[in-house]
Image (cartoon, rainbow, N blue to C red):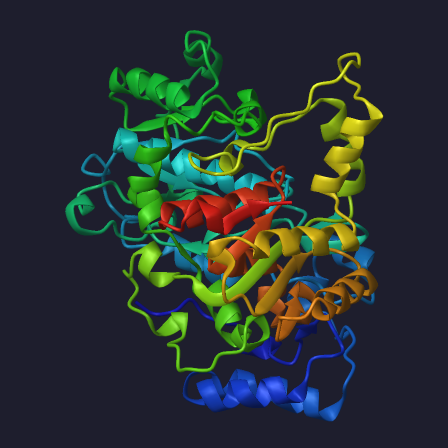
Amino acid sequence: MALLPINLRDLNGYSVKSDNINGTLCLRYVARHYMVFGLTAFVVFMLLLGKLSFHEVIVEVPLAEQARPESSRWSGLRLPPLYSQYHEHELSLPQHRWHAAWHEGEPKFLFIPGHSRGSGWGNIWQEILLNAYLSYKLNRAFVFYNYTWNDDASQDYSDYGGKPIPSRVPLSALIAGPMVGGAFPGTDHHASLSIAEQYYHTVCDGRKRVLDREEVHKDLGSWMVDSITEGWVRKLRTVDDQCVEVENSQGPIYNWVTFGDKSAMRAAWADFAASPVVSTFRWSPLVELAFDNNREVVAPTTISEPPLSALPYDTPNAGRYPAIPGLLVLHLRRGDYAGHCEHLAEWSSTFLAFNQLPGLEDFTPPSGSAPWGENTPENTALYRRRCLPTIPEVVARVREVQQAHAARGLENVYIMTNGALSWVEKLKVALTDMGGFKHVASSRDTVLNWEQKYVAQAMDMLVGQRAQVFIGNGWSSLTGGIVVMRHANGFHADTTRFF
């Protein structure tokens, strides 16, 4: 299967997050992968050779984007890509019979228009996984949708911290496989192939059966994943309509209450992990190429390792993303987490459902004599330490985890973070000063083209998924997505830790 296209005109618009990437690192990369990534590596090498510090490139906005009314709002800034070629790829899937005279021979569909919007990728992705899983259990085609910040078709860009981001990113720019229309493997080859939302609306216009979410949920008696899934399976067994969707105004089927309960995934885990939604999951070619191009940044190699883009398309999740020996990955959320961690403490929140799978270290909120919605100073300090650790606390936790048998041989560190560059550099120095690590890098050191910049969180998840040891944030859904894939791929529970 051909790779989704990469916009080559953007190759001169690399986003470089640090000015201290060693030129030697890029030379080693060229020597290792020149046959596969010659053009990309050459451009990066020339950029690094020409200057040691990089800055955001401000270029003329393309005429097609200048015509959009919101373009003037971002005057002087380079506008994000709109990923039109990925949208086109989705609409051209072979299961989309656009010109068929009738569609009775097609499978039954399930669409959940009240899916979450305007949230970080980790929150959206965990919901997509369960929506696709439910569709598979029903043998209905999953109607996949964009990663959406803003549904308004007149606004291609949304404001994120004063900067423009794409309002809608096609799902195929982030992930690949059955969830976005790819074939199911082996014995599942008769499973209904996923379809794009636009195709669903076209085919099902005027003949949709809309179901009341509240009617199904009022009799469940639980917000656990297994209860919700079984409730919807029972309901849909009584519905023969081809085009079924859930009432839009009633929100997601699996919502924040479910994802926030530490026990919500446990009963459903074995069946969920064995489903092709998980076992055949893969990241998009765009994300995998970003990983391949930054392989030496993440952890310098000493032996030949085939790039992900060279592996057969149908390589199972576990075989495609094995552990990288010697790699320790830390996920450290900053920014808005200062306030968020305080809120978690006030309500004595448990770790999220995806972070409390069977066998993983448990977190039980400490007890204390404080009114509901408040907490003791001691407990609040504990939450802060585990949710927003300082540099000395990060170092201390790394030292502690290093004592585990599963941590033997760790020599490279990769820091997944949205922290300020100055803070990240101080942390890198502190980890280097510990001794024992040959290489310490972070998200800020990666080299990404213009399309990869806006899906960089997915590349970080791929790195975390492949760590020999991963230390994450138990209240982070992005950590949760990594934990799910590590656990499903058979990584020993002792290799997945939390601050």
